Image 1: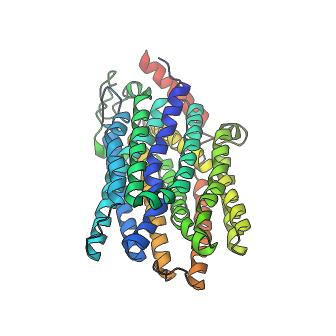
Image 2: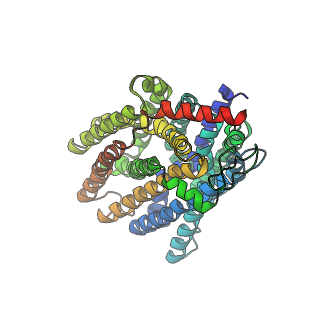
Image 3: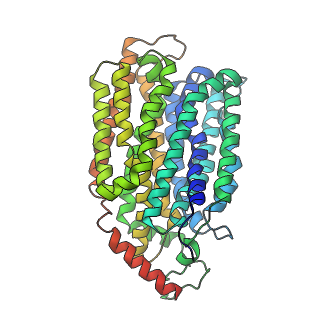
Length: 459
């Protein structure tokens, strides 16, 4: 059996995250602005809605992870969910950016809460968790996973740039709903392409597992007879699951703050909303380039050391922006450093999740792709929820008023501090967590053990 994905398949997998980001980055970067300035919802209410929805969303990730592990179709267990959620992803984006103006204030808040929760906790969870799980199923080779993650995040960053340079232009021309229709249709098409041109290789092999309860080996293509309760017990034995989940929470809380406040930082701190695209370019372009060369960086430093160094560079960039006057030079320099430091926390972090899946199988004898990958989605959602909550509450604390043409000096200073200082604290926590999560040392032993196991099962 050919276990190596082709270049076409690697690209088909990689563009899938572009489809996810046409929905999620658009929500993360512009939904708060849409709610405060267009719909008229208070910033504090927005922060609360987003945090509570994401906490529920985090729990739904664990449920969806268990569902993926129990999905068995001719397409595999992760791919079919990408197909089934492609169109709902596009429709969900449209639904969110179409708050009826005829509703009362309470009605608008209820509409926002319901639509946001449905998209975040149900549709996006099912789609993105399945997509992340697919990485470990396409190839058992860690090198392939790093390579696919690197290509993936090149397309991801390109998509983020496309969104930040074009969203406001499309809103001006077609309105918020019109913009969401365009992005939603493109997202659905991309996700269908990812489904159509990828395949799962590990699924049949990994169903040949040892049943811990009766000592029997499952036959090929049979589902492993492991209950949901037993799955969670086995997951609890994988200590790296907890660590990687915390890293995702830290990273995506910081990213949520960066995405949610960037347009306010450009407009109110630097004085020009047109700088939004350039700020994003400074942050994204280093990641785009770096993701392509990251596999070669890993060969020199390893994934773990690269991630530690990344946190340090990110903190330096943010501290520079915090202590220097709010000028474009300081902002551009700081965001470039933030972008460079973030390279390992894209490709490297998602490759680390696949390694955690392998460790779980090595440790317990049972492979839990979907449930372990729920760390990815759970951490992303809870982190993004915290980030969005901090943005909303921070704007409220800063006395932000969307009806004013210019904010007060105190409001501007608060926006700057939230945008820079809070992520520094988060990244410092990330360094501490990462000190307990060095899988690079164990990787050769794990890879060898799993290869021997699968050889025995195939024979």
